[in-house]
Length: 313
Image (tube, rainbow, N blue to C red; front, side, top):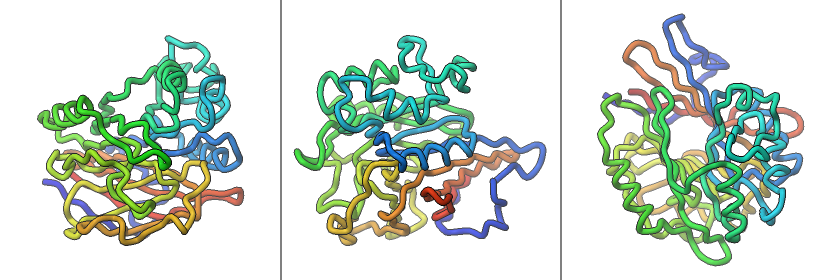
């Protein structure tokens, strides 16, 4: 049986760090960042906060690096901030911190989505694939969570909306129709959001009905803001979340249209004024699994919790 609760909770209820409540509990923590590779103080604030959580791994929702990535910008825009979590035995230049956790464990802990800035040119795409050793579409399982990463296209605000290729659409349908015998959490990540108030039109044009594919959350970026949306029936899965506030300049108010989320959606939480990231924690107690999502905002003065919600199985 699955139960979803979308609300802010008292810190007293779950505890500040969402630590396991008994010695028999299992805890996995990971971070979600997006639109972050700006190589500036805002990216630094977010990366320092994320690393202070000591997550088991980090997930991105695209635009991992800005500007021209035909040179060494991936090192300056990503490796210098998150190198502790990157390990790529096929490309030693990606191993920027050989004292970091990932290199010591010989295990990559940094899983990326492809964004439109990452595929700005053919050379940029080649460098992205080489640096992260990442396919455009891939999946992985970590304990009780299955994560799916899809390529939503290279189009930007200037030249159109994102679009799943026919091959990617077939991959999505094939992978997400597979049985889920362990009742894992199933999280989908790609770059262009299907629902957002951050643009005058939807950002992914080749839509697919994730509501029918038995996933728990669809998490995207592209719009430089944070937004959690709900269905008109607020108990219906999946969650839709936009988390594109990892460092690049935030979306200006003039590009916000609160009526743009779609007829069956509204945003529960919206913030285009702060940089931040999501801390996800999965606590397993006996046969009960709960995934908590906490969105923290951060600046040079510190960080604070802005949004919290959970899904339970």
